[in-house]
Every structure is written in C-alpha cells, then in structure tokens.
Length: 108
Image (tube, rainbow, N blue to C red; front, top):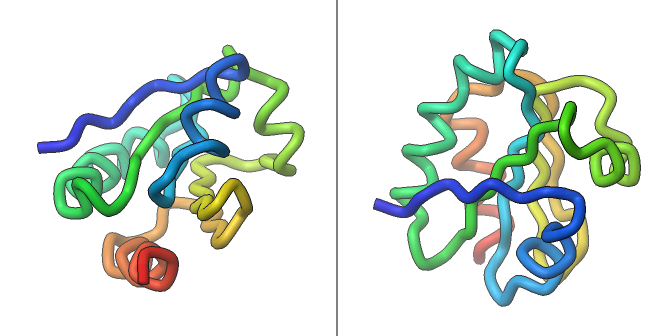
C-alpha cells in the first residue's frame, strides 16, 4: 500500500510541483476534527491509486507559506496538482466517491 508522505514548505516544490505524476495534497492540522475524519479515506485513496497518483499531507500550522500561496483558508483542503498546476480543489471533508471522481478527472 502506498504511503502518504509529509511535505513542508521547503520540500513542496520538489515533491509536488516537479512530480511526474499527479499529486493530491491534504492540507490539515492536528486540532482539526474533520481533517482526522478524512485521513483514513486519503490513505485508502493513496493505496488505490498507487503508481498513478502521489498523495501527500501538509500541516498548515507548521508550514504557513504554501497554504497562503494557494489560498488555503479552511481545512481540510485537498488540492490536486497536475504538471505543477492546480487541477482541482476540494474544501471540507468530502466523501470518498467525490474525491475519487476528482482524482479520476485528473489522472486520465
């Protein structure tokens, strides 16, 4: 099963923007209940899309620069990147089918 990687402000460009495969980044915080609620779903998706999608997480409290750059004001906030560009953005604890549909639209 694919592992969800932790990224930070300094590793973001290398891991997310320069990735050969699409990337789903989960902006979250330790104190965020909905973030914890969708974490298992994000991990399941990482396994299901292994090899087609890179899944990463960023703690917004520890890394303020990247969330600010992408207008992340509420969490959980999931952004799909393809070719270094924002392809989809999902705000809130979305159900797994909605997340899968967004991912499918990006990895075609």
